[in-house]
Image (spheres, rainbow, N blue to C red):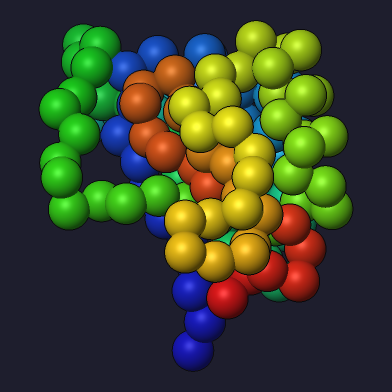
Length: 130
């Protein structure tokens, strides 16, 4: 068994794809419209679906926003340098909601960025993935 993907419902699919590909550097792996169901699925990730976990962006036509539940926490991404990653994300228009630095009560360097729908993404320095 292995983890295949995490699904996020998004209000503006083009804006979300732009964020995950241009700002976070993922690849758009596939995108498919389902006209009879009035939704579109787009899969983004750093590797292929055959060997990596990816994110499924689901856009239900006619829905422009969702209430984020308080049970969901965040998606975590390992980066070589958290400070540099935040600089790059900021330059590309991304919103840093927790500046890079050591985690509270620990030494792991991390930061948080918010995607266009308000989902939180944690950036962790490589080697700090636990």
